[in-house]
Image (cartoon, one colour):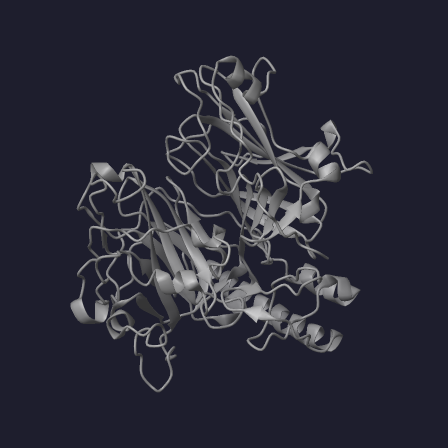
Length: 546
C-alpha cells in the first residue's frame, strides 16, 4: 500500500511539473488572444470565424494558442495527453448522503481519491398528479427542471459581502428569496461524477450549463407555476410541491435559452465515472467553468406515482488540488440527439435498421481532434443493438465500405456485436479519436415484431430514440452533431446548423429499412399508415459560416 501511494504521489508530482512546463512553453508561443466569452464553458463564436477549442481560457477571455499555431504547442499537447485509465464502475449505488454533511457519503466509484469531497446538485421535489387533465401534455411523461448556482464556498456570488440568494434576478422579492438553489463547494476541481436517481422511473437526467444571462436559468428558479420552491436556508428539507409543473423544454436543445450544452447526462443503469488522470471539470466563474446549472429530470410513467417525493440529482466529486485538471472534459452527443428522425419504425418486423450520421460538414469545424475516453448508448425498449463507426471520406466525400471502423457499441468491446438493454445504459471505456472531416455513423437495430402500429421517434419511453453520448477532451464548442431535418444537421449549440447538401446529403444522410431491404416509409405506406414530414419542413434556418 505504501509503494502504491508513493507511486500515485510521484505521478501527481510529475503531472504538476509537466503542467507548469506546458504553461511556460505556451506563454512563450503567443501573446494572449481576446475572444468573446460566455459563462458556462463556452466561447461565443464570432460571426464568420471558425469555432475555437475550449482549453485553458481565462476569465478575461485570454487563451493559449491552438495546435495549429506551431509545433511546440503540438508537442505540449502530446506531452500532456493523460494516460487513459479504466473507468471504474461499480453496480453499488451511492446512498446520497446528507447535504452539508461533515462525513463523506458512500460512493459506488472504485479508487475515488481519498481527498474527494461531494458537491450535490439535487432535486427535492414532490411529483404532481399527472392524471389530472391539463397537468402535462401526456400523463405518463413529466420533465422537470431546477436552477442551481454552484460556487466556491469562499466566494460570495452576489457581492456586497453576503449571500443574498438570487437578489440579482427579477423584481419579485419573494421569488428572489425563494427561487433556485445556492450550492457552495468546498473544493472546485471535479475528478469524478456520480448520478443519484431517486427512483426507478427516472428516465434520464441532464445537467445543463448556462450563461449568466440565461433566460432558461431565470425561468427555472421554480419548478411549479402555482407554488414557490422553498429555500433550503429557510425551510430546511421541505420539498418543492405544487399542482401545475412549470413546462421544461430541455434548455440546451432550446434556441435562445442561454444554455450551451450539458456537463452530464444520466441514463438508466449508469454508474459513476472517475475521469482519466489530468482530465476533469471545474466549478468557478470562468468561461470553461460550471456555475449556473439547470438539472433536468425526466420521469417516466409519472402518472403511476403521484405525490411521491424524489431527491434525484448529480454528485460532483471534487478535490482541492488545482493541478488535478489539465484538460477540460466535454460531452458530445451524436446521431439523433433529440429524437427527430422522420421515418417511423414499421410494426411487425423482427429487424429494422436505422443509420444516422454526424457528417464531415460538421466535424471539419474541429480545430483539434476529440480524444474520446468513454461512450454511452441511448435508445428505448425495442432497440436490440447500437453500433457507432468512424470513417474518413475519400476525395468524393464518401467513406468506402472498408473504411468504416467500429469504435463503440453497447458493451464497449469495439466490435459490431453486443446486446442493448434499456435498463443498463452506462458509460463504458473506449479509446479513439475523431479528427476534423471524419464522419460518425450510428446504426440502431430494433425489433418491432410485437407492435401493430408504427413507432415514431420521441421523448416518451414508448417512442424510440437512437443516440450516442461521448466523454472526451479537450472541450470544444460543438456538443451536438447529427440529424435535425431535411435541410440541416445540428452542429454545435442548439441554434447552430450546417447545411444538408453536397456529399453530406449524398453519402451521410439518414436511412431506415426493414430486413427485406424495403425502406421504412415504403413499408409503412404499404401497410396503410400515413407518412411524416421532415420536422424542419418550411423552417427558416441560418447556417454557420466560416
